[in-house]
Each structure stands twice: as structure tokens, then as C-alpha cells.
Length: 381
Image (cartoon, rainbow, N blue to C red; front, side, top):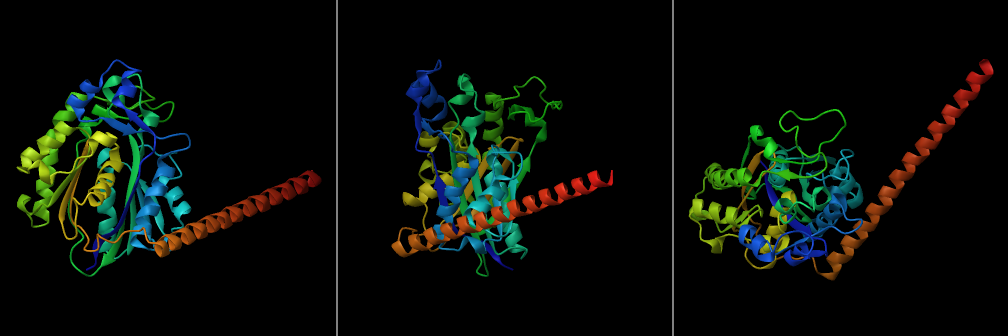
């Protein structure tokens, strides 16, 4: 049986930094109020032209460059996002086109748990032999659905993207186990914009149609209950225990929730990775961005056992246990590798242009046929 191994990882965060003091100049809040309740000091906010698609493309390219793999060899692209550019086409399809991948592509929506949900789908498809190479992207532009006059939510969220490239290998290891769960009865506690004109969900008819809405205290209670439990269940599935954890990477939603999960697991904070102070809650991008930074900081090393766990809208929760790859030291900074990546990106652009041109030719031919039929019908009359 093939095993799904992580071979590449990448991230993208917008350069636009918004600090707590910046928010305090616009709404009734303070840096101290935000820090003490959330642990957040600043967040990245998408600039003009930056969307879930554009950020996801950047993270995907970095992951593929690290693995030094040709995007044309990727069999599957899954994008985990709650903020797609459009309902359809899927964000994954647009990322696939931009990077030059050739296989299947679809989106997965499970809120902040989405990246691990998507990771589990890709891993199981690799284990089943359906695909050999998969790209999983968590990408969010939460600032696009945030009510910036609501101090209970606008201080929490940020934008960004992270990606893992997975590959089949006969050697045991890689992604070892998952634990997924949901409780739809709590769906009204964390919701996004309503789509459509006539349908108003019965679970929350009073909620805003435009923005993200959260019942913070209820979500907090839910998160502190499920985070540690999900991690424990995933560890049992992997045949491991808490003592085997080298690094715990939780969803970066709230520092107090992270500390509560660590306390439940009896893990010292030295084994817990935290970067919420820099980015806030980036939903499905949170865990892959944290993994990338943990590697950069020397906190996540070859052969380490890492546990990733998240919770989010749905309500959903998810945990994954993985053995970090042996070749974690390989970096995508060498000139030959960077040159290959550049050439592959150019080929992807040319391939996309060729396909688009083909669609345009088809449309012109169809228009010509329709015009011809119209003339024939007019002559017959």
C-alpha cells in the first residue's frame, strides 16, 4: 500500500500589516484589549487584487518549487477555503490552471478545519492508488467578508494561504492518521454571507447576509472541548501517545484556546507552535502557514512527529498526525531549482493561453454556426 508523504510546503501572506493600534484608530478597542483576550498583535490583510485564488497560487508554487516537481505531474488539486473568489468555478480549478497542473481539482469547505479535511481526502486517495501526487491548498481572504465596524470579529481575522505537496511512497510514514468530526446543530454559531435571494437558512434567519458572524463565547467553549480530544483520538489511530509528540501545531484562532488544548494534553508550551500574534485567525490557511514557519524557525525537524488540529464553522473539528519528511532541510532557494520553477511557470502560462485560445475559437465557431442557421431559417420563411 502506498503512503502519503509530505514532500513540499509553501505559504503566502499579504505584505499589508494591520496592527491593533491601526484598528484602535477606527473602532472602539485597544491593543491591550485585543492582546489579552486573543493573543493577536497584528494581522495581514489582502491588498487590491489579492484574493483566495491569487494567494493560493503563490503558496502552491512555493510548495512545488520546494519539492522540485513539475506541476504537470500533479494528479489532484484540492483547495480548502471559506472565501472562494466565486461559488464556481472552484478556486482549485483556477489555481490548477495558473500552476499548470493537469489532474482533477475541487474545493472543500469545512471552515477553519478545512485544510486537514482536504489533507485527509488527498492522503486517502493516494493510499487507495487513485492518485500519486496531490496538492492541498488552504487559502482565505476573510477580510472580504469581515464587518470592520464589529470589534468582536474584525480584530480576529487575517488573510493568507498555505500549501502541502503530497506524494505516494511505499516507505511507511508520512500522514499517519486523521480524526474528523462535525456538529451541524451549532452551525448558527459561526456563519458567513448568505448566498442567493430567496433562501434564508432556518438555523439563523436573523443573521447578516453580508458578513461573517460569530457567537464568540459559544465557539470558545466548543473549541476548548474538542481540540485536545481530537488530537488524542488521532494519536490513538496512529498507535501513538501524547509522549510521542515532537511538535503540536493547533489552529491559530485564540491563544487561550491553544493554551487550553495544550493543558488538556499535558503538553508544555515549548512543544506547541504559536504564531497567532503575527497573523490572527487565517482559517484554512492557519495550519499550513504555521507549519512553514515552524520549519523556518527550526521548530519542526526531520522525522518529527507533528500533530495538527483545528476547529471551525460547521461546527467542525479535525486532527492529523504526521511524520515530518526526512529531507526537511532541502530548500527551494538554489539557482538551478529556481530557474526550473520559473521555466515551469512560463510553460503553465503558455498552456493556459493555448487552452483559452481554444475556447475562444470554439465560441467563434459556435457563433458562426448560429448566425448561419439564423440566415437559413430567415430564407426559409
